Amino acid sequence: MIRARIISTGSYLPEKIISNHDIEKIVDTSDEWIVERTGIRERRMAADDEAASDLAYHASVSALKKAHLKARDIDLIIVATVTGDMPFPSTACLLQARLGAKNAAAFDLNAACSGFVYGMHIAQGMIKSGMHNRILLVGTEVLSRFIDWDDRSTCILFGDGAGAVIMEPTKEKRGVYSTHIYSDGSLSDLISLPGGGSRNPCTRETMLKTLHSIKMKGNETFKVAVRTLEELATYTLAENGIDPSQLSLLMPHQANLRIIQATAKRLNLPMEKVFLNLEKYGNTSAASIPIVLDEAVASGKVKDGDYLLLEAFGGGLTWASALVRW
Ligand code: ACO
Image (cartoon, rainbow, N blue to C red; front, side, top):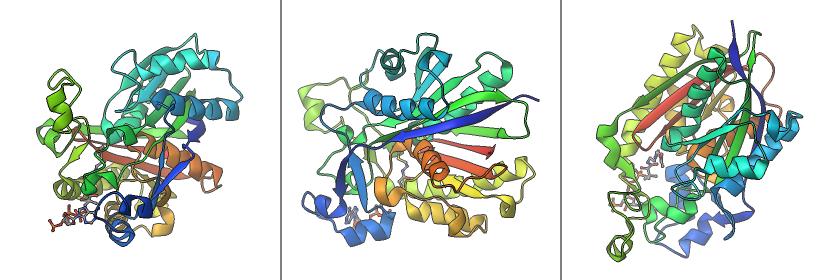
């Protein structure tokens, strides 16, 4: 049986740190409120000359280096992002050019915070079917450019970053065991970025209405996220005949500590088995899970044979999970 396997990981976080205390100076909020309600203490912000493809480039170079591969060894590049450099060409094509990955096809994928796990779904399908052999999958976001810094309910949440993985076929008893993707477009108004597309192209009016920044009904989103992710995690393990006690690490999308704690509680999983970095980076949308993966692997917390559960929830609405045996 052929499965897709992650052979290497990489990530890149911009240098500039924005702490909760920095945000206290911009809007009426406090470090205490942000930590208590979200678990976030600081986030990264891309430099003025950095766009999503730049962050993606650094994460990809790191993943290629660790795999001892050249960019020309890649035959497909998928970039999950909602903050690409521009509407087109795709950020994936810009990344392909910068890497010199001349043997790769390249496209972007938009499933907001679930984008990376959606990408795993596509990548593993392509590898299992034999259509592609070595895929570079990247999640990259520069959300700081799409934040309304007057809106205290959203500006505290998001950060910039990128993570990348390289996937290959394997006949071993490891790799991606299953992926599950879902959407509910009827709840699209819960999280959106309404301006800049063909519905509300950029005009003076859309600028004044701040339509070019993220809008979120946080509390409603929170409730749907908790319910959905609890069900998704339980279902994904059951589908694979894995008891939660066999799970080595839960790798959740880093949106809100309370959402993550609820999922862990439902699985009866101690928090030591949950990888967290939202304290440092906040919600980096599609980049969140590949950054988690890279940091978990680098920290030595992931061992051969470990069962890892990846799960995400985001705009669309979309939600997705993957069970991986390392
Ligand atoms: N500082 C101080 N007070 C604040 C802040 C702030 N930064 N933000 C909101 N408040 C206030 C509100 O104004 C409100 O005050 P009121 O009761 O006087 O009206 C009060 O705090 C409670 O507001 P809620 O929105 O109900 O706060 P909640 O506990 O729900 O926390 C949060 C808000 C953190 C946004 C939470 O709802 C959340 O994390 N939601 C889910 C986010 C998520 O998972 N998104 C999905 C991924 S994003 C993507 O796909 C791009």
